[in-house]
Image 1 (cartoon, helix red, strand yellow):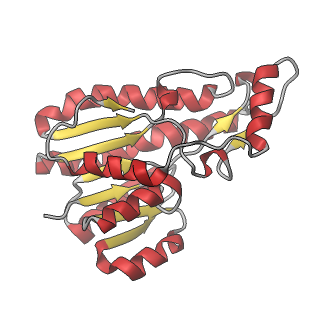
Image 2 (cartoon, helix red, strand yellow; image 1 turned 90 degrees about the vertical axis):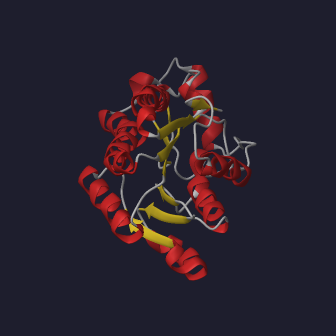
Length: 243
């Protein structure tokens, strides 16, 4: 039977590649994005196999409406993929309070809240799989990435604890912690703190990213095939944290 996926950030980057891979496999997707018109081509190709849902993941009230909309349309959610997010670079003291809040709201609080919104339905089903798209930055810290990695360490910790909490309910949770992919994470979606004198390493890294010289080697399409395989398994897919 075809599985129903709920994927955040599905219009661009890794989310887009995964959405396409899932649809090609014959599964169904509740595809969320801030701009759902970017999914029009997939709707034209796959029809009612995909349900675009407008969602800004930092609108926590809207999260619950979006999940309910997916349930109304498909009747269930078998796989949740928390993918939406963005990167930020700079020295810890250089970020504005708004930059810190925005990073944590999008990369940590939002996936936690989406997970909380989906869990009641999976609990009733006594089945489900949750994939949190984290990062190798959720394991190893690097200068210039303090706020991004604070969010990712937090998400990986939440996921590891949650996996033990919900496994008896037939719900399996995995934190996916890959390296870089050729998406706009390091391009259009990257944000920066102001540069401060004395932080030579951080400032050099900032300039490197801004120049466009950083080109990740990871292929999002190949990664999507791997993530799709995890999502379609019916039992535990190994450890709660995967590279």
